[in-house]
Length: 158
Image 1 (tube, helix red, strand yellow):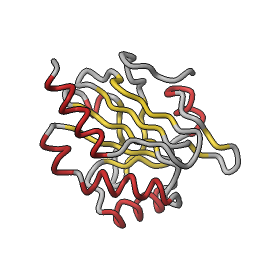
Image 2: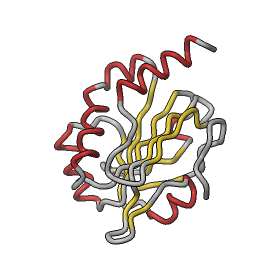
Image 3: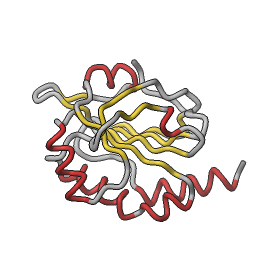
């Protein structure tokens, strides 16, 4: 699948969630602005920094009604350790099928080992993409402060 463009409906994805249950996208974000963070893995220092940044920005994000979810191909144990390490209060999915997620979203993948490259989406309350950030390598990703500013801008120009 080619990259998702602004105005495209975010595709339906269901991923197992740390702590039990599943993350169902875009439904779990419906009615709120949403952020979907696809990260390379708990081993990636850039991903750790990004997720920790979103954790630190929890108050500002919640104040604007922005819900965040993250997902990777990591197993349950690695994902749970990452959630604990950074005190992540948003839903984190694990065991994502890299090929299925890439086919649905246009995310880049790494061949060996096989994982998803960093990809981020901001969704409007109806589940449509309002911005997408695709990376083909370690750097280039959504930043929490940028998302806060962007959603403030979008809300002020409705």
